[in-house]
Length: 400
Image 1 (tube, rainbow, N blue to C red):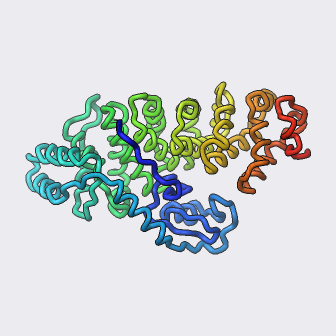
Image 2 (image 1 turned 180 degrees about the horizontal axis):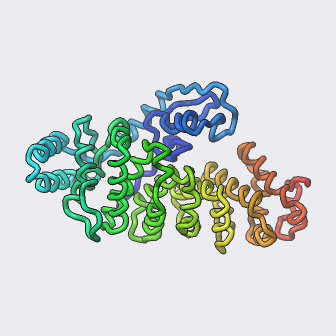
Image 3 (image 1 turned 120 degrees about the vertical axis):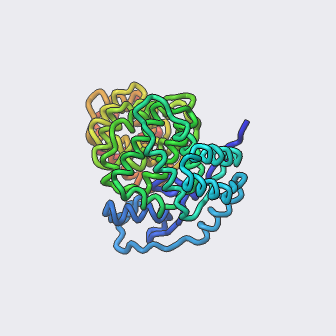
C-alpha cells in the first residue's frame, strides 16, 4: 500500500491552504504565501489580518527565509525520480518543426513523464507550456470522447511545473482561456479517472493566477462536474484535495457561492465530513463551506441536511484550531441569519450548544471565543435551561 506523506501544517498558507512558494510574514506575526496575501491586500482590499482579524495599518511583507528553506528541503526530500527535461524539450521542438509528428512526439513525452513516478518537471520559458495548452484548446470537445492527442498533451501538462509568469501570460488572452477552460470541463465530464484528475489538478494551478473577473464568470458546469468528482468513490484523495482547493479559490467571487449551493455542493461536503478523517480534506471543506454559507442559499442547504449542523459541530476540537475556527464561523452565520425555531431547537438536540459551551473553557484564540459567546448569547433565552447542557458547563454560559 502506498504511504502518503503528510504536508506539515506550518508549510501551508492559511488563506489558500496550499504549500507556500514564497512565505512572507506580516506585522501581526502570521506567515502567508506572498501571492495569497497580496491578493487579499491589493485585489480584495483587505485591511485586516485574515487569521487574527487585527487591523493592518502597515501592510509590510517580510520574507520568511528560514521557513522557505525548510519547505524547499522538505520538497526535495519527498520528491520523486526526476524527469529527463532535455529529452522532453527535444521532442517538443520536433513536434513544433514537424506538425505531422505531433502525436508521435506527444506519445513519447507522455511515456517519459509516466515513467517518472509522478514527479514534476520545471521547464524554463521554452514555450512548451503554451504549446500544450494550445494543443488542448484546439481539440474538438463537442464529441463525447477524448482524443489521444488531447489526452497525451494533458498528461504532459499535468507533470509540468508551469511558472506563474507562464500561466499569467496565458490567462491574459480571454479567448484562449475560455477555450482551454471548456476543454478542461470536457475532460471532467467525459474523461477517464486519470484524465479527470489531471484536469482538476491543472485547474487548481490555473485559478491561482486568474483574474477575479474571469473567476466570476465560471459556468455552473464547473460546480456540477466538481460535485460529480467529489461524489465518485473512484476519485483519489489527491483529486479530492485538488477539487477542494479549486473551490476554495473560486467560491468567494461574485455569485459563485450561489452556483455552488445550487449544484448540491453543501450536501456533498456534509457527507465527506462524516466519512473523512483526513485533516487537510476536512480543513478545505470547512473553508469552502464557510464561504458558501455567506449566502442565504448556502445556509438553507446546510440546515436542510439532516446531519448538517451536527456534522459541522463534531469537527470542533477534533481536527485542528483552523478547522474549529471555520466550523464556529459557519455556525455563527447560521445563528445570525438562518436561525428558525426548528434550527435553534436542533442545535440543542444534536449537541451543538454543549460543544460551544465547552469551547469557552478550552485554550483557544480570543477572537474565536468571542464568536462562540456571541452565538450563545443570540439565543440564550431558548438555550439557557436546556437539559442537554452539562451542569458543569452552565457556569460558562454567557449571561443574556
